[in-house]
Every structure is written in structure tokens, then in C-alpha cells.
Length: 297
Image (cartoon, helix red, strand yellow):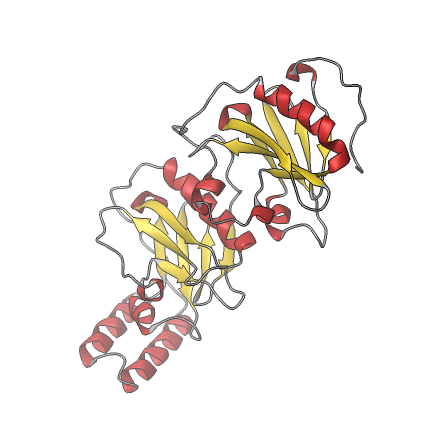
């Protein structure tokens, strides 16, 4: 395969490795303490792989290695990460399609002998199994953002912000206003793939009651659909937030939100008035929310 170094199959330890095993859409480089996975950039490469770029998987994050027949004259080499070792896989919670599994390397069947050699070498170095006490694989870098159906989600490394879209957000979210969640206030993330019904990204808050059953009514969630919140954008976002949550202690108080643009406040009051006239907001709700918006000036 293009980019693969040819080598004699002689016994050696991983400490002498740096060999590259190239397959479809990715190449794995074997080192003494990790496997470096570099994903190709190309029109046929899954978008999630392109978004990840490359990932270094420490051997302590791996609990197993398999080699199995694939489709149409291929074999599949896969390493199994330990539960909780990778924030990306923890956030995905088993929802990724097989073709988008970042731990699979698909190879032509004629490379099965070479793949089996590396699999055996790797198995001999694995010493850990079971749930990991902390994330061992680096999370996607921040800042990150993506467009959901009902709002824009942004994460700067310290807080998550949701800015609602007029065309998609429910009246409940408009009444609540744009949201900002410091990482210290969060306990986790719930990601539901946009490739299934009712996909969404929900932030789980510390010391909060049960969230609304429907994500479109929850100000701590954005919903996917109609091409919004694709896997390659929303899943790395969820993983980055989850990793930050796992390494952050709760904060005692919420930092003051920055003051908003007066023009933005005026637009939101005007839209609130439209909701009021349509009967979607009561007189009391209109007065309270209008006062809150004016206080932000």
C-alpha cells in the first residue's frame, strides 16, 4: 500500500519499531509506548477521520487487538480501547458506524500476514484492561464550534455557549435566552448521533434537576437534523467538553456574563414581542424576560 515501509519479518521488540502499516484512509505507526494513527485527507475518507487528523493512542489505553476478515477482499485490524480511556469513544457511547470507527484499520487481504505480525507484537505489550480511571487519549483541541439546528454551540476550553437561531429554537429556549455554562458547573455530556432520530448534544449540569424530556425544550441542549450538527463536528466538540469536565473541579460561583451588543438586545426584545403577540409568551413572562434583557445592557 502507498506509504508503507517494506520490512523483513524478523523478531524484534516494539522499542525498535517506528514501522508504518498503511491501510485505506489511515496509517498506523507503531512506537514503543503508543500507536500513532494518521488519517488521510481525501474525498473518500470519512469526515470524522479528516476532522481528527491524527491521534496518539498510548498502549496503556488499549486492552485488546483483533484481526478479522473484512468486506471485498480486505482484513480489519482493530485495537480495543479501555472503557473511559478515550473521551471521543466515551462521548460516542457505541453510536459510531463501523466505517467511522477510528480504531479500525482496513487493509488489502494480501497484507494479512503483515497485519497479524503487528497484532501479535502489540498483544505482547498490553498490560492493562478494564475501565481507566482517567482519560489516557488526548481530546480534540479547542476552541471548537458547530451549527446545530436550533443554535450555534461554542466551546473555548473553559465554558460552553449556546446562541439560539430564530428559525430553529423553540419558544422555551427563546424565553431562557442565550446560554453560557462554565465547565465547573457541568457533570458530563450526552451526545445522540445526528444519524438517528432526535439527535442532540445535551450538557449535564451539577446539582440540577431532571432535564426536560425533549432536547428542543432544554436550554442546556442543542438539537441536530437537516444537516446540522454532523458527526465530524459535534462529536469532537462533545469529546472536548467531556475531557474538560473530567479534569475540572466544581466552581463555587458563576462568572459574570459579558455585556451584549445593544443592537442584539433590541433584536431579541423585538422577537420576544412577536412571541408575545402570537400568544406563545404570557404577559408576565414577557415583562420578566424583557427586564432581564434590558439589564444586560
